[in-house]
Amino acid sequence: MPLKRDRSGRGVVSTYRGYPPRPFDPPALDLGGADRNEARMIPAMPIPATRGGRRDFIVANTRLQRPPHVAEIQLHLADEITPIWKLTEDALEEIGLPPPFWAFAWAGGQALARYLIDNPPVVAGQRVIDFAAGSGLVGIAARLAGAREVLCADIDAYCEAAVELNATANGVDCAFTANDLLAAPAPAWAEVILAGDICYEKPLAERVLAWLAAARARGATVLIGDPGRSYFPRTGLVRLAEYQVPTTRELEDMAVKKTAVWAMP
Image 1: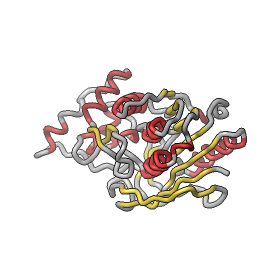
Image 2: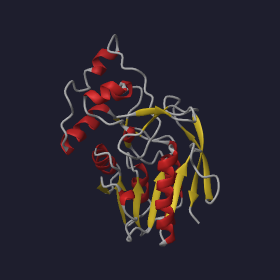
Image 3: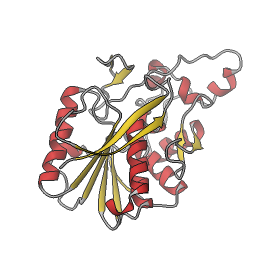
Image 4: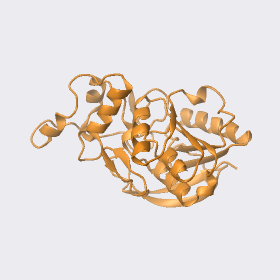
């Protein structure tokens, strides 16, 4: 589970299993005092490598919350109240848990979800892919906005359980795949491809953007949510909307991130 410092100085970036690398620098786990009872919620043994085991872990170590910029949606998220927030990298590895990016509502995803809910015709009646879905926030927003079907794609197996739980909490359904979609051209059936927070590392950002550009050339609508990450392209995209997205200083370099939604022309 290799971690390295982001060149932008915006925290630790995971390179776990390919995509999507995101900053992750939680406080160290403190087993003393008031935190002792919370820490006991974290399993001492590795989490069962089953869909049910992952689901049970998420339920036990997150709570239903409404992301500040998309209050219409509920997600199982970690925060300073939940014990998963306090896990160190070593503790995560001990229990067999990849960095839990699915447990946070990232700025780019919140902006993209906000845009879809405010502009439902973008996805209404369409077949949609939520690429590097994490919690499934963007895919859920697409379903709420009237998408005919949504495939949430993420190579982290925990995301399958997170997407299922979160979709159920919002009264929608989203399909899921753990296949690495970058290994082949985007599925021909995809009419809209949504991607939030994908530009943390240069090689990966270039690979994802090339994959998205190829999908756009075949006719798919491609929307990207990004708060000015290090390797987000400065040209070649059309800005559709801009938001001030509340975040947390534990995850980002500021409490409110100026975040935009972009389209590939």
